[in-house]
Amino acid sequence: MAERLLRLADVAKPGRLRDPTRTVFAMCGIVGYAGPKSAVDLVVEGLRRLEYRGYDSAGVSVVADGELSVAKRAGKLVNLEKELAETPLPVSGLAIGHTRWATHGGPTDVNAHPHRSSNGRVAVVHNGIIENFAVLRAELAEAGITPVSATDTEIAAQLLGLEVAKGGDLTGALRTVCNRLEGAFTLVAVDCEQPDTVVAARRNSPLVVGLGDGENFLASDVAAFIGHTREAVELGQDQIVTITATTFEVETFTGEPATVRPYHVSWDLSAAEKGGFDWFMRKEIYEQPKAVADTLLGRQDESGALRLDELRIAPEELRAVDKIVVIACGTSFYAGMVAKYAIEHWTRVPCEVELASEFRYRDPIVGPTTLVVTISQSGETADTLMAIRHAREQKARVLAICNTNGSTIPRESDAVIYTHAGPEIGVASTKGFLTQLVACYLLALYLAQVRGTKFGDEIALLIEELEKIPAAIERQLADMDGVLQLASDFAESPSVLFLGRHVGYPVALEGALKLKELAYIHAEGFAAGELKHGPIALIEDQLPVFVVMPPPGRDLVHEKVISNIAEIRARGARTIVLAEEDDLDAVRHADVVIALPKVPTLLQPLVAIVPLQVFACELATRKGHDVDQPRNLAKSVTVE
Ligand code: F6R
Image (cartoon, rainbow, N blue to C red; front, side):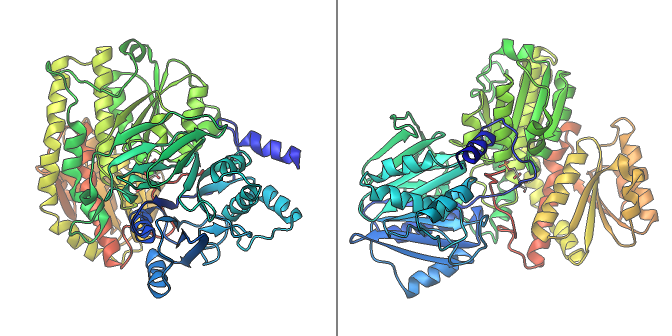
């Protein structure tokens, strides 16, 4: 057994190759509370704000009068709320709660968290995957303990129960247990014999502390407690925090006091609520003008030169960079694809874009003169985090573009450019994507400034163009009737294609992704130039094909895409062309035109994606889907 444990420990080390066939996802939302108010109400309120992280079961546990009580239900949070209304838990000022996205064990009442130890001492909630749970489960069996659930979490609860029974405090017991676990986890625990204390530990999975007035919170995301306090503390890797109503203490997994970084959350409760919209996603689409403007704010000094305050890499080092590698997943990867066009065009530095999940498994060539740029809205995506660790082991400098202050990815990077999208709660990324694009443009321009590949006045002109984007999106959003009509026209289409060229290609991919994840229909994005190399075989009568049109005059690319439109129409498909407002060629050739504001070619993704987001949101709404919580998905993918 020892040998097996050793091998598991080895493969779990950052940068080491792990079984690439094993892809598991674990997201989940976690809340803990210690204070004078009704802990159950506060924890359930927090879970409601974290439901975007997982929504297949939920549960809470309280400590009252020296006893642990647990309520948990499969299905969305509303099932748990119904249960609590029918059979209330005892009144208590101490509770933990969880909203789950199933990994080990299906979404049943029994597998829902919190999990209790057989001796009734502790209850535990967990986000992540305990990779050596099978070994530990066998060990528990030898000790005569048979878990009631199929989860890895219960194994941690059982171990913790045994550990506290030895007589130490909950913090020490959790530290001992954590040192035996492999994988990614945030664990939050209560012990009925320590009725004023909640303890939590984190490794490779998010955890923040909310510091209130006479009350303290623990959560996967500040959204859980933002209605009560905006003062937060981010926890580092392999740290344990112990909270009571009035104290918090942080130590490492080896028991030494840890240094932590307190911060003030820059947004408030209203940003975490729907504000009259039917979906968070729709609200977030309409917040894009502000999100773009906020991300641009304060980026120039008095002379007009670009200034990126959090970018802690010296200009000499940036001048020595000979290759840039952009790494990200999903929508953020598509933002990275756009970044490549801008970086290479403005700086002439070779730039590769790579899926984070592929990066470290193919022995990539990076070194001290490589700048690795990672893009992540959540700052917690496991694939991206592992790629960062691999790049840093190879001595590359890592710069993170991230929307979440206090998250792991910026903390483990050399430098960061924060996007200022505010909280993104809809599972499908919208304002996250737009602000990532803005950050990529700013980075590319900054590199051009530092390396002298663009004159200051050229950079200033491009910044002026970026500054016009919020108003342009505002105008677009004020006139979406045509797009809403298209969603109604195509609601029953079994398949939709998206074509684009140059920076329109990542837009096509992102448009297709939005439709897949929200409307659950087959959607593919292609590079328009590839049409004749295969995808044209998919074209058939009445198939909707969205085409992102390059602005007229862009080399010969515009004319080539016009030819693609003709080829598609000749085969009976319907073309919906997103084209600059005075692109008369597009009007002549398309079945339907969606007019885009006139912007510089490289910036076109900022306006071209907006109608595609609205289209996907509306079509999914018409199909009766839950737009904010699409099936099988969760917001942050915190385990590989
Ligand atoms: C799609 C979407 C995902 C994320 C991806 C990366 O709408 O949201 O594809 O873009 O999981 O997430 P972050 O940016 O948090 O690393």
